[in-house]
Length: 541
Image (cartoon, rainbow, N blue to C red; front, side, top):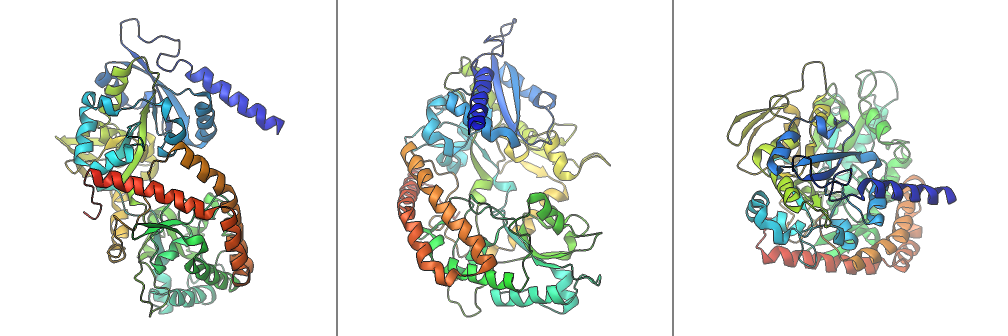
């Protein structure tokens, strides 16, 4: 404990030393010798990216703001500890990109400049808010402030990160049809296990695999998305929370969740789920899906696109499955998991310190990201290297140089990719390589499922602001709720017992104030919906 305390204090002191001059240059100066204002810009970015000062498009930002920029590069993998130390110290850089989100604003909003009175100095951002009013909704706090600018990329994103894939080559070899129900899936997985569908003579097939759920709750690419079969639009958000007909609910105590656990246990007991599904890390999960010596070994899983999870050699073997029915005769209409609002609209991608001395330069700097040229370059890379400008608002994203980078690594090499502030508007014309377009037809498989979702009433939105008290209460309650729920999920899937232990489990979650958290989430949701209604946002359009 003492070592942790010393490490925390060291982190705080490091942040104070780094940002005590927020609002001025690293040497305490607010202007260069030739009179240009200096702003410090902290950027949290992918480890594959070069330094910000080496990205050619950042020179255009300096021209736009008429300032000198002192870049502070932070790897996303090390940001969490630095972030908490920064917030605890009450010190942030003049501008931070990709470091803070709507969840930080309830308690620490006073550290950031309210941009609402400044919109007259931000013409690009103002135009975006008018054209894409939902971007203003997610940027507005519970007390009406705008403490950050978002990333808006609706035309180039999907409705969900969770796409469900099955090996069609295996199905064809075994004379099977793609499953449409849980029962049919079970039958297919049994065939995958016992009938050597990859043809190598080895019992090495993994019928089902998934990204290991953590102790902190469910994330992406995990089997809780099968709750869509019961009409639950599963978000990528607070554990168990979802919305139906405008009412916040929590599936952790609902029969549908119990049924799912019992189903998964049956699959586990038959050896149809990877024995490492609860213990492997991300690299092990993705490595298994890429097979052995160009031979597929995973039959069914979830991911963004086939190429992402199975690799270029095996991707063509897989097809996307729409939502399954739990039973063929069910009357409930299946839906599908949804986090499209978070993919298309990310709140507070750029925030400005309330203490900045060069406010005018900082405002110009942030606003510049929302011009078409800068939006494209900050997301895909510099003109002449990663992007060809074809004309006004018309661009071609280039393939990586031959024998250099994978398409994914190339996107992150010289840009902030989807972590960039900016606005990909409907006016921007983009020609993109095939790797960028793969998700389109994959996502379209869920068109019929999304017809059963009212996006104004059946979605738990990702960027709903909370008050500091709401944040405090939910965080305090979440500790017991999460521990109780996630330990039981792993135990029940692998060892069984959900039917006999269910009532005690539900009582335990209620003792840990699950109902209080549902009530708070309803308050947050109602406030957010009121803000949507006030500026006539209709997400069904």
